[in-house]
Image (cartoon, rainbow, N blue to C red; front, top):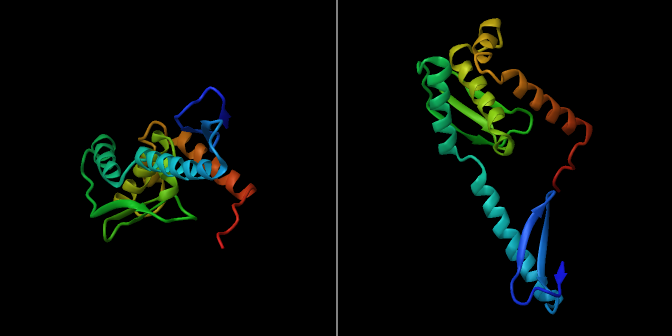
Length: 164
């Protein structure tokens, strides 16, 4: 967006998933393209920094372990992983928990639910009544499940094209 009032500065912001670039009116197309690319990289970096990191996952899992499992659980590692069909996974034998990288942009209460769900698998490997009893100790479990169901429904209704 060219602005007659803007003299020297360039700014960008994310509006509904689209980068809105503001440049001086006098700026030519080639220079605008350079600035667009630069500002896109800057916004992408900001978005990556705003997402929960793997160290955040570890810290959050420790808090949830104390709060919901009296601190009795232990695991070998917890990290994000590329998982397109699942929101998370837990290998009980090796103590490895993986959370889908898609989940990094979800609200905190949903991410906490995913962590509680996978932590519960360290104690109960199946989805038995005992397992769901553990998961239900998280007060927002039902709400988070509904949120994930809505996302999965939307994804099935409007599938993204496969990258070529």
